[in-house]
Image 1 (tube, helix red, strand yellow):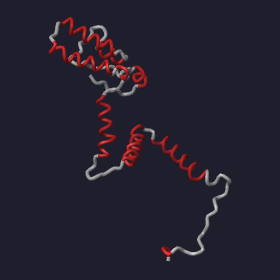
Image 2 (cartoon, helix red, strand yellow; image 1 turned 180 degrees about the vertical axis):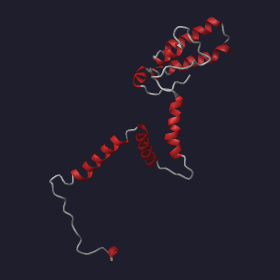
Image 3 (cartoon, rainbow, N blue to C red; image 1 turned 120 degrees about the horizontal axis):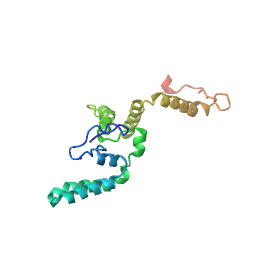
Image 4 (cartoon, helix red, strand yellow; image 1 turned 60 degrees about the vertical axis):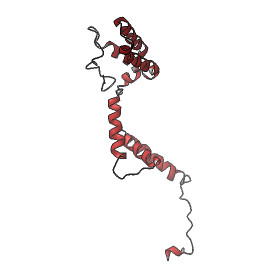
Length: 169
């Protein structure tokens, strides 16, 4: 089950998760509340009560181990409150459109620094923060290049060479 955003309720359950008649997708709700240990225990308990063979139980145990190993990375309550996306589909789609559409151009070669700079600018643009960023950027550039040079309210003295260099002739 992939949810488009943390704030949106699940619209459907995976066929493997049986909906609870009163509460909807109880395991999904528990995962979204950061209770991965409870979900893993419930999966294992269900497999035991059903009397599954070791072969039938293996995918359930694998999934339970996955949840337990990553339970510290799964508390979604903070993300849910912010309305942030948690589904891998949203993340993968963003990576494709943000990164691959720009970096995978035919014949393009990128240095690490150049690729990082372009991706940061694309991320700022896509997040809707361009105006705030540009205001910050121009103020920082002005402070770096002008405020320090004209701190005494006078431009710095520039020496004009008396003799022109050979390249200017």
